[in-house]
Length: 253
Image (cartoon, rainbow, N blue to C red; front, side):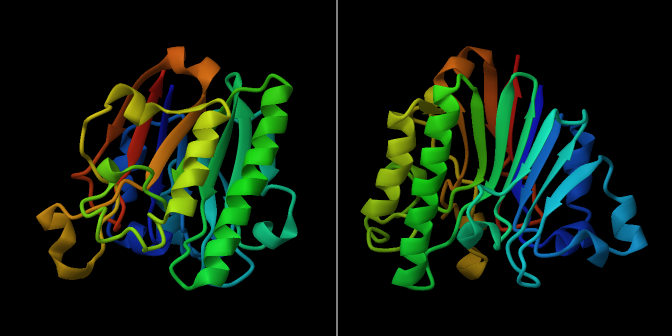
């Protein structure tokens, strides 16, 4: 079983670059896209023809903003849009799909770089999601959370940790929430397999950051502890272009 996550920073732009050809060629069981910035009806016929799998689309109410889409090979047993809280769900940040013995969350976490109000919103989003996952774990569900977390958890997860200690995305209170998920029965499976490996999933478009290796690891797979024995590998595809993020792939038995 193969799941790919990718923040495409605008699906129409990504399709215009042919970027998603790579993703569909991998024949994933699920392809989770974030920051699609469009509604399905905004795609033209040529763009729609490039979508090689059925999909579930959760756009933001605000045009040209946020939004997630999950493409699937097999029809999910259950589909849930959002997290059941309107303050978050209006931004089109979450799709839940259930199948193959687990619940998959495709999430575009809020970015806190527009001021303290958005940092607070981001932390409340983390808290609401964790409460939801705690309840699902209590019912015996296995969970995979994937997407753009908009937070680098540890200093190894970004090129310049000291310089960014007060930057949203690496602030202590944001990093603490990622740790809370790990303390509540989740495993960052990339770091589980590669505790000392330095790879990034996002690079600013400015200053040739990608070419210079100045990046952040913002895109994760957190899986329930009981699912870890099923995980074969997590692959960061740094060389795949088409967005300021690169795709990340989870392979399960």
